[in-house]
Each structure stands twice: as structure tokens, then as C-alpha cells.
Image (cartoon, rainbow, N blue to C red; front, side, top):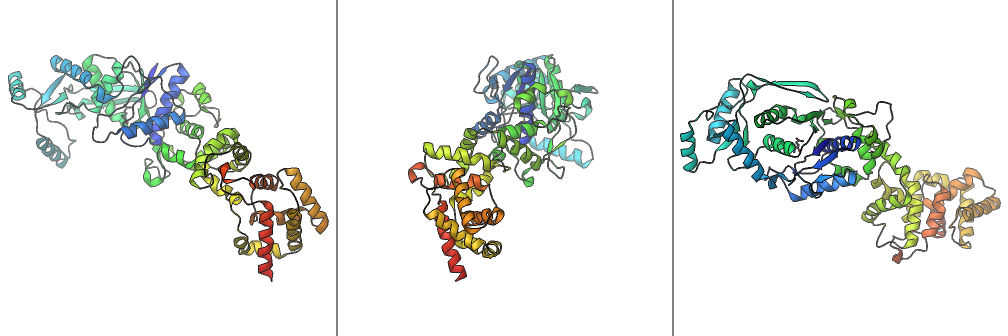
Length: 503
Ligand code: GLU
């Protein structure tokens, strides 16, 4: 089995195309096949090297490595259409010779006028065949005179062109609706429907899996296979990815490209898992499947033909699962760019700072949908503003009620003469002390400590938070982190602010 992903490098990798890439990859990996990456850049105006680079980068990020093609090499290259023009030209000469193609000298304005006239008459626009049967001498004379004709495929009249789509079943078109298509433009650039056939055939592609938007191209492509006497591959057309309003997923629905989901802090395995289930199901209700499991189970027979509605909440649910499963080291590596742009990582991290992050990031990340939410979640480690806390009605009311004022002061006093609370046990012991001295326990004790330490009525567990704060409190700029005010400093500032408010 040989499959390919054949992106046009004209923009970012849309999640719909990423799903096409994924299904091809899964098919190849499931069946021990070869996965080919081919770049379809015959649209010279819209194709850019930057787009090709981001598409490759996004594919690699998703884990969809290819065996053959751009960058990987292989025996049936080149794998970029713009480098295959000679090959197309040789094949075109063959079709001209066999009479399956002919030169068309019609001016674009004439063709456009004919198109408009057909539309006005309520007929499907179709090339009227003006140049179909020009005398060979005439053709030669015009070429010699410098005309640069387009090349058209001679489509047989009154025929059915049909194929058995693996996803959609039998699909049939009548050739009467297909006017002889241009296969090579006047400037020598092949049309997509032509180049794709030569490429798929010469690259020995056995299964063409692509978006449903290409279904109406397939009969034209089949006619090209026929003209060359080639056996076409099997086709599977995947339904489109839709937005919540059932229109094709587009900008106005929000994020559409792999790059955007990546920037938001979705993990690649979450996006791949989510996209795999958009149209395919393993049949046993299992939903959380990493790439290797997906590949082990994937089959085209269970790809549905109803369109998949993109549901970001479901993606976020999967992402939470993978964030919880990620190793601390990986999570930190993934988190650093977000912390950098939030100004929390300020330079190269020391080993101590690295260790600190690997202890605090996983418990915080476990309650996130996406990594771009992490800087907000970590805000309370880096920033403490007692005045702002006491400006909140809820905090002020809670701190004013007995025994909170006494607990706050006792906690600040105890911290003033205590070493940093860098371990959970040290925190617990000091809290117990303060409890004994003030007679407060349970919520009255710990909730007050929370308010004094974070200025917030809720947040991560104090057992995790207090040691994390105090471990980082004595870091220096050389550790590569923004300053973290210690528990002692926080409590002192809080009590001072409380005194100002109550005096
Ligand atoms: N270059 C085409 C696209 O990006 C792919 C067509 C195909 O898979 O046949 O839509």
C-alpha cells in the first residue's frame, strides 16, 4: 500500500487537511504501507516556501512522519510539482500524439463570453469544443506563428464515469457535463487534475484519501487515467470538517489551523486523537487513543460519510487527559515558551529553577484545558498584592471575621522567625503551631492562611503551593525566573495592609 498527502503550500495547515494527512498516515502505519509527502505547488502565485515549511513543521509536530517525499527522498521523485514540469510535458506529448489531447487556441475572452452565455441560458457552462477538430496543418501553422495554446483532454461523449469510493460508495458522473478540460495552460503549467494523476500514477499510489471537496475532480482524473491506459488507485473521500453551525470550518468559527491550536497549548497527541475521531470510530466507544493505538486500530471501513462537526470543548477534554499524562520534564519544556511570553521565565533556567518548575507545573497543568492558560494559573506564585486583595469585598469580609485577624497576625509572626517553608511538613508544623496558639483549626485556620498567602479565596492546594512559593523565594535573577515573593514577605505585607484598612 502506498498513500500520499499532497498539500498545496498556499497557507497554513487547516485542521481539515491535517485530518486528511492523519488518515493517510494511519492507513499506511496500520497496513505497513508507505506514506509519501508531495507538494502541489503548480499555483505559482499562491505557493510559498514559508507555507511549505510550516506545513512540514506542523506535520512533524503532530507526529505524522513520512517515509518518502519532500526532504525524505525516494525513488520516484522529485516530490515537488514545480520540479516535475518536464515529466508532465513528456506525458502531454504522448497524449497529443495518441489524440487523447488537443491544442486549444481559444482566447480567454471568448471562453468567458461563452461561459456567460451558457449561464444566462441556464445551461451548465462547458467548453463548446471549438478547437477539438482543427486540421493538423492549421494547428501547426498557428504554433509556428507563435501562438501558445492550452492543451485540452478529449472527453468521450455520452459516457458514464464511475468509481467505488471506499467511504461514499458508488459515485457516477456523466461525461456530458464535463467539457474537455484544460490539462496544461498556455504557459505550460499543468492543471491540478492532470498533474495529480501523473504523480499518483508514477508514484505508484494505491489509495487516494482526500477531502470530499475533490469528489467532483475525480471523474476528470479518471478520464486522464483512461487516456494513458493506467489503472486508477482506490479513492476514499472524507467528509469536510464543519463548524458548530454546520458550515465548513473557517476563520469566523475561530481557530482553524494546526498552528493556531498549537499556539493555544493543545498537545499534538490530543489534536491527533481528536481529529482521528472526527469521522472515524474504533467501534468500541474508546475515545482516548494515542497515535500508535489509533494506527493499530484504524481502518477505512469505519470512516463515516457524515460530516464531522469540530467541537473545541471535546478537544479540550482530550487535551486535559494528555496534559495529566505528560511527564513533568516534557510539560516544563512545553510550558517554558508560554512562561517566557508572560515574562515569568526571564533567561536560561538554573537546575534548581528547572526542578522547581517540574514540581509545580504538573499539578497546576492538571486542571488546565490548554497550556496557554498556565501563566494565569501561575500568576499567584509571582505576584502578590495585599492592597488589591483587601480591595475585594469577599476577601475583606472573610478576613474581618474572627478568628481571621488573630490567625493572620499569628501566622505572620510565626513566619518572621521561621526558616522558609520549603517542604510540606514544615508548613504543616508551623500551621499547627499557629492553630494551637489561636485556637483556630480546619477551615478557620487554613482558609485564613490561604488569604494571607495568595490574597485569593481559592486556588491550588496549600500543601503544594506554600512549599513552591518558599522554594522559589530565594532564587536570584541568575535562576532565570521572575521574582517569587516568599510566604514571610506576603504575610508581613498582608498584615500591614490589614492594619491600614482597619485603623
Ligand atoms: N493539493 C490538493 C489540495 O491541497 C490535494 C489534492 C489531492 O489530494 O488529490 O487540496
